[in-house]
Length: 220
Image (tube, rainbow, N blue to C red; front, side, top):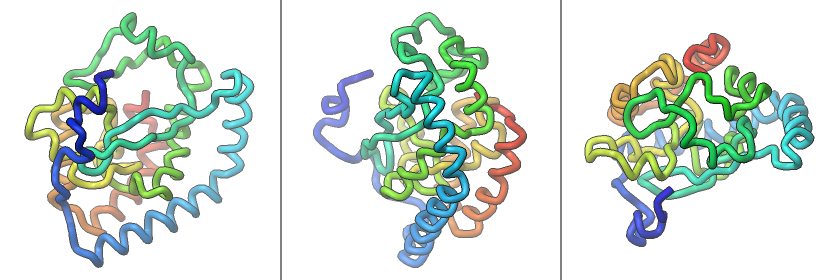
């Protein structure tokens, strides 16, 4: 991973805010994010506690994976997930073939993913800790998925626009096939969202997310 401080040049932003900047929309969206995250945490608390306990045992007390991600306008934050890979996954990445185009790294049969981790990923259970990121204000329920620093360091100029709105738990890519979609099409979907961001668009994506998760399409 590149040196974050050197890459940002001392800044905490890469692009200027864009999307729907209406104060009414932003207030309603943030309210829905907080209420929605709290309701989802309450609904999934038993499942999250079970997963946390099992992972605590199977990972030697390291059930949560924390990774620095690039958020709104390029601001860095720590994103949380349930651990789905071996503890030495980063060291083994060079031994795994990347099956995707662009800067993202994906392999359908990545041997670093544990048996439990593959199940957690297939139903997006590993993403549930990001509900806390939403409460902290780092993320929203709906928005482009937050990339890692090494990916953004390889972006072309037109691709930075996906960082102009707050990243989200679900997005158009999430409900349209996830990892089956090429990187450039993924970015174009995010840019479409930036341009068409409104409450109706957010609600439609939220409604479509459960079916997408249950279908497990492109989840790996």
